[in-house]
Length: 375
Image 1 (cartoon, rainbow, N blue to C red):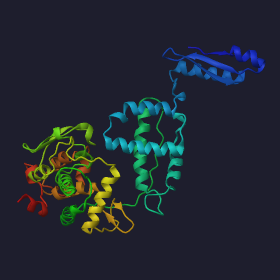
Image 2: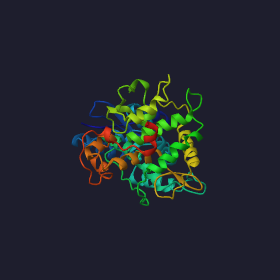
Image 3: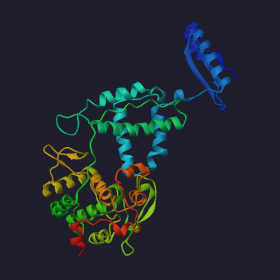
């Protein structure tokens, strides 16, 4: 395995003795490579380096891999197959990273690069007027970026991944929607304006979605992507596709009769169970409108959507409500299965001396407001 020195004949004829020297070699895959170095002494030094790497088997051709080419490959192999919600979060994080860092070569991304990104990002304007981007938001983006960079390492484009120094966050206790607040929000669904132009009122759509999320523990993106063909109301079951949930596990999920009854009120010929032909931000805005009508005004205790004067619940608080309400009546493994947690330690957060029971779905806690609807 040898490398050689050469000068380009056309450059030699133009520049004479000032023509730069280059090094040529064949990589382990048999592909011819070359690099223009400059002076002959530097070229000889680079020649010895390449020959040493080829002889020791440590040669790597990744130094020339650009961020652009990696992104094209990553988008094609990974991003294209991600669920819509996860794909959106990953692309947003990459957009901010590329806007601030402007990466060129993949190997130029070091720990210092990540720290520079954090330093710049934490000074940018947040959603609320006069605020900056929150530590929780930055850490969320860092987790997305770490997954991308780790994939570059797995593909052997990087010898090692840079370290990610996460921003210190103020500890907040996870919050959930208690039954009395759920009842208030449920009754205030008449304030909803969207979705419009459907064969049923927007209030029915929202009551069905809130009940579905509260009584199944599904993440909001999962019912929003549920197809009519994946729902069997007569059997009381819904098919959750692997590509549409964070746990990447497909399964047939039994539904509580209260959920089924609400789903019957929004039966239509739309391809999805919960049609929403607007952007995702409009979904949150409409949820905010409903909670304002319900008089929800919370102190800053959790990860909520904020307004200038108050904090309100997010959709994930409905999922936490499902776990909290049923942790005492469902066995830990049943709760983990229903919530589709990958790690049992996550489920353990909601379990306090839970007694083992058998029929999980039939024993789900039904809020008093939904019991009135069922009767």
